[in-house]
Image 1 (cartoon, rainbow, N blue to C red):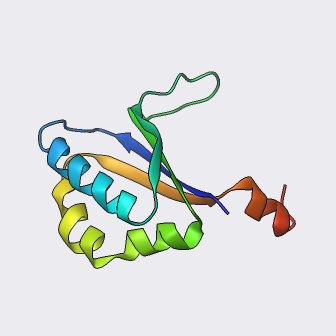
Image 2 (tube, one colour):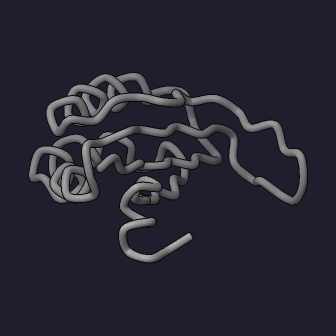
Image 3 (cartoon, rainbow, N blue to C red):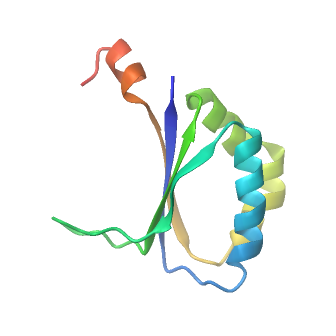
Length: 105
């Protein structure tokens, strides 16, 4: 079932980001991921949100996200490209179908 990787970014420096962005997008695609939301600001309706932008990817399942995240290509070649370019919080969450099957919601 579908799973989602949510990336929240703050204190982003734009210089140097394009190189990382191009490579990470190709890598994510190679693991079955695709963009749902791409680097957009949030409209805060309630509460605090200290982030500048949100990106959300859909993957076939949680295992695909884990394979991407733990891949040598991402960890050793791509992720270092964003070092010092901002702070990212990254979450992986199962789709509703998986949560319901496990007795959640």
